[in-house]
Length: 306
Image (cartoon, rainbow, N blue to C red; front, side, top):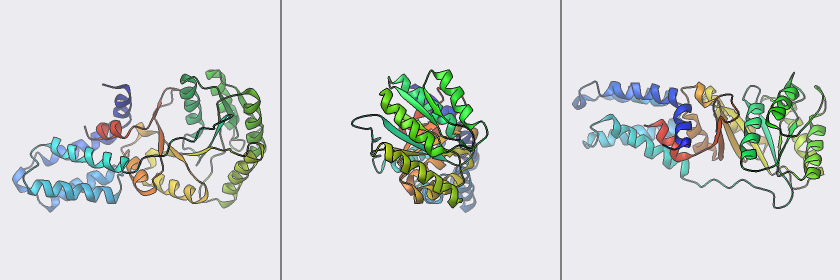
């Protein structure tokens, strides 16, 4: 069994367990007497995973059709339909590759709401790319949150990664500018810039993010090469709302799905990809530095519908 599949099995354990219990309940009934109530129970189970209404209704229609044609005899038949449907949704449009800089460092600006796991995800990404042989520099631009800069600096020291920070309450755009300048001078491959978490409904705070982006471009016209949004998987459909609203203001080029292991709502990954088409770059579970993996649609589909 591959390590990536095991990773997603771990992250989707709660989602899968809840779904399987409901499906097993269907087969405790007389297979020849499935009723509208039976399908309503299955629909409720699928909706609880936050796969999204469109995907849920499509799955339900396919299951009903196959059942009526006598093609469903075991719970594995239903799980196979789920695997096939979710995998098709996740791969219907190929994701664009990460836009690595042709010359100089690649700059990735990280955005997201308070509590979405953004700072921890940056540390995990730094570790991941350092393991790939990349030279990484961090920009501790969360000057708004108490101990925001300190948190990333502690991670940087633990990882042996250079970091550029500022004082609490300082100008986040200035920190980002200094981080980009320092990274270019040091010849690093990747600069990951943290920003203060903010609610997508606060126009003034979102305007500050625009300033950070603008100041970075003054120092390095091609940057930021990527803007990645961290989204907390455990909040279910609210994660879809956040992704939708941030995408209206910024050219989001990738998503980091966090806290997948703390929820029974792991299907929101599929809903976000289906509606918005944003590339899901990485998925995070746990608090350890290795608790992050590139998103793998096949492993995800298998882990959810085993």
